[in-house]
Image 1 (spheres, rainbow, N blue to C red):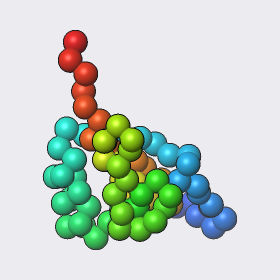
Image 2 (tube, one colour; image 1 turned 30 degrees about the vertical axis):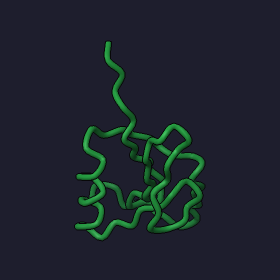
Image 3 (cartoon, one colour; image 1 turned 60 degrees about the vertical axis):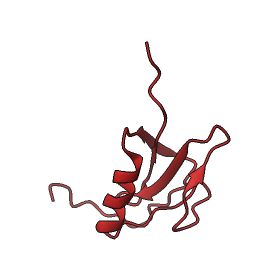
Image 4 (cartoon, rainbow, N blue to C red; image 1 turned 90 degrees about the vertical axis):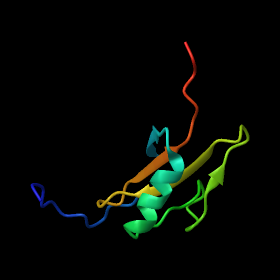
Length: 79
C-alpha cells in the first residue's frame, strides 16, 4: 500500500458519499457477496438494499479507509 497514514479518528456518515451507477447492478451485488463486502442501505443498516421512490435500487459500502460509496442501477438516458 502506498499510503500508510493513520486511520485513527476517522468518522464517516453515510449521508456524505461518492455515488456511482452501473449497467449490471446484479453482477455487482454478486461481486460484493463473493468478496465478503457487506452492503448497507441509505440508513447504514447492514445487508439491506435500498429502493428509491423511483424504483432504482442502490447499496452502500465502505472503502478500506471507512468512507461510504453508493452504487446504483440508475438508467442511462437515451440521447
